Structures are given as C-alpha cells and as structure tokens.
Amino acid sequence: MKFIQSFQIFESIQSYNFNQVDTYYFTFSDEFGNEFLVEFEKLPDNEVELRYFVKEGNKWSYKEVKTNIWRLTHTIMGQILNSFISQNDWIETIKIVGLGKDTEKDAITQRTKLYWRFFQNNTPEGFELDKYGNEIYLYKI
Image (tube, helix red, strand yellow):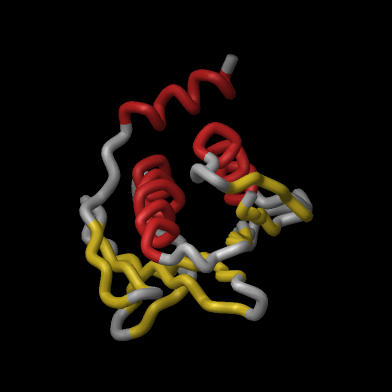
C-alpha cells in the first residue's frame, strides 16, 4: 500500500516554475533557495542524457541539498522532460542515471528507485521504459 500511496501524491504536486535557457538547458529554484540546472546532453544516435545540478557558490554540482524531492522529481522528470521532448522530435532515446549517495550500500540507488517508480506511472507519451542497473532509458516507440 505504501507504493500506491506514494504515487497518488504526484497527482496533486505542483511543479516549480522553470525557465528554458536554451535548447538543452533549463533552470529553476525551490522554496529553500536552491538553484537547479537541468541539462540534456546530446549523445550519438539521437540519444540525450538528462542530468541536473544544484548551484554551489559559482559552480554547478551534484551536491545533496535540502529540498522537496517529490516536487523536484515532478518538475524535472515530468514538466521539463515533457517540454524538452515536445520541442525535439528527433530524440530516440533518453538516458537518466540515478546517482548514489555516499552512504548507500544497495547496488540500485534510492534515486534510481524513485525515478523508476515515477516513470512507471508517468512515462512520456510515445516512449517505453527500460532499466539497466542504475540507468533508466526511455525509448521512442
């Protein structure tokens, strides 16, 4: 029942307002004052890798910060990703890697598990979902 309840939450979550900086970059801030950068790195064979960073001083990093993880996930994996897909019909594959925290012992990271559960119920239209270890793939169908 925990699984079902956790994903009913996403239906009522509002995403953060975001700005598109250019074709491959988006930015937004959360209620805790954190600034985020979402990057779509173009790879060979019409593939992109979705990555996001938090601003630390004058640079972008993968540093862990206090934030609303549900709202963050909904904004990046839902709103920003769907906006990017709608503007770039050439995309065949989207790769997302669930990076681990220093304290994690499981081979599959908590972030991968969160992203996977999110996409199981929110796969972008026209894509199918697959996973290899901590890498999640969205393939155009």
